[in-house]
Image (cartoon, rainbow, N blue to C red; front, top):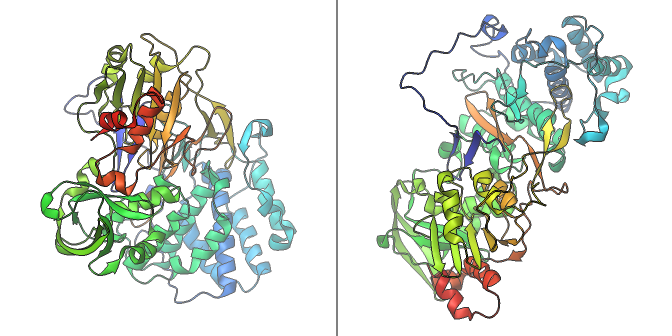
Length: 598
């Protein structure tokens, strides 16, 4: 996780936060003009690909799958492309009509051979890029190009020759991230905002660009379903979509195949992902005990109470809505997916809405209203206490919530907590500032400072990720010596998960709560055609022993979840579990409940 660049992901929006020192002048100096590239000089298809499709035969689907594989491979391996000598999107449009017209694999492979030859001779590498297998956490998939039955001897040999003599220097379309980050930074990917729709060429380019990015640069590729099967599955729905709504919804489903909470089609979901509408009932819902439950009510006029179970919205059952919406929610695990769906469950057009609820065992229909602006309230997504960042719950227990934590106050928090039996650090939220080191250094012991390992991209070996040990904590004073209960749940996402990993190595720390979102690591943005923007978790994040965190989230020492009855009673059962772990069995449950009361 880069200290300078963090990415804040919520169920509603994605924004980038730059954390750095210094000040910025009111008028920033103009950036020096970049020299023109092939993107400036090759403009042939800026108005459209001139490729139209009404149907696709099985042979054509096979041909397009092969085209995506070869096009994506050459994009990141052939020196003419990695040096930026070809507008590779437009070369795809020049090649695609010929590939679509090929009547056999033999004819198709001959076209590929001629295509590669047309890119110019490949000089023998000196020195050659090398892949150190002993350091590789994830190796590139190269078996496909060795399949001579599929590609023929000549093309298979040509593809392998390209790989052997691949560039070991900078690439035109990808680089390591800036500001100390080591995740992929996808470069020179044109948005093609003004291309008319439909355009089968650009629609397939969307699929090919997304697929190639994941095939060659995702550190979590091994956790995904068969990417080649995903490519085949989406050829027809992506290439043949006739309406913009159909196409964008299909693309949202495509990026959902990444099973990565970072990956949603961020600048399109508000307009296209169901339920569509800018308003919602002014209450927060959570998925508890397999039901959509009112967690917090912000407006008594909404007609709801904490602990109400939502069963229907305007006559449609919640179960039916969830089944319909589920394919459009890209999350790393089902816990995060249900978090996002439940947050949006009452979303729709502004105005009256009928809600079927169960309260105290009685079913009723409530007249409520959707209102504007409620999505901006982070309290809908976070589950920590109200009030100041630092609180003394009792003389024995301190409490710190990271949703309003300050780097400058890190030492003050520890000093104020000195002498307590324990401190609750609530990360059922997103940290307001990056306090991994400022606070983590005050919690760590000298004999245990490494809390994470990253798998890092290798520009000379696309698809390969080496496992490295990064950013150990530096134990500092004042040191907190008490027990530390770290609270997590489905709201603990990305930087919040990384922060949890750092704090949990404290000598007397325990992670308490439920499954986290399972999406950690710097975010790599991916620009798609039609000005659609998605992303991927660009670093593999592992425990010091190499254990997985992506998808499964973080292990907990104590499992604790809210209940419907507890929510209705105003209890915070996860905080209660943290207090019980700190104080032990000698403290009556009634006292713990009183300390944790919201």
